[in-house]
Length: 195
Image 1 (cartoon, one colour):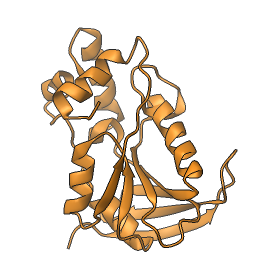
Image 2 (cartoon, rainbow, N blue to C red):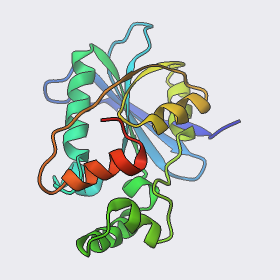
Image 3 (cartoon, rainbow, N blue to C red):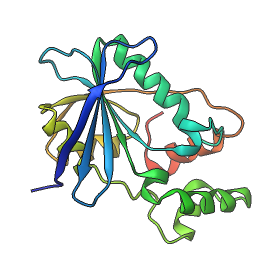
C-alpha cells in the first residue's frame, strides 16, 4: 500500500514575508526524514504544492550550477501569493544519488559530460527519485488532490500514480545563468521538462 511515513514533529516556523507557516517532520520507513512546510490556509481547495528535492549546493550555498536555490525561494513566494499551500522538502539529494555521488557527477561535468551522462556513467538512472513518500506525506496532512508547481511531467505522473491526483500543473520558470544554461537545456531535452 505505497510508502509508509510517520509524523514525528510539528511546530510553528516564522519565515520572512510569509503567512503563518508550520514545519512538519515525517520519518519514512527507510529511516529518511522529510519535511513539509504548511503555509497559510488553503480552505478545502486543492492546495498549491511544490515537491522540492534537497540540494545542499543550491539551497544553502547558492551554487550557480543548478536552479534549485532560486526555485525554492520562488516556490515559497508563489505559495504565499496563492494564499497558502505546501512545500515538501524531500531528502533525495542529487535526484536521489546522495551528496558524494552528486559531487562526483559535478567533477564529470567539469570534464564535459552533461547531467544525465554523468549520472549514467556513475551507474545511476537519470533520475532515481520516487514520489510515494511525497504522496504519503500529503495524505498524512489530509490532502487528497493538489495543484502542482512544476515543469516536470514525471512528477505529475508520479503523484497521480501514488494516489494524489494533480488537478492542475502550474508552470515554474526560472531564468538561466551562464553556469546553468546547459543544465536547464538538458532537463528539457533529456528529462522531458516542459519549456
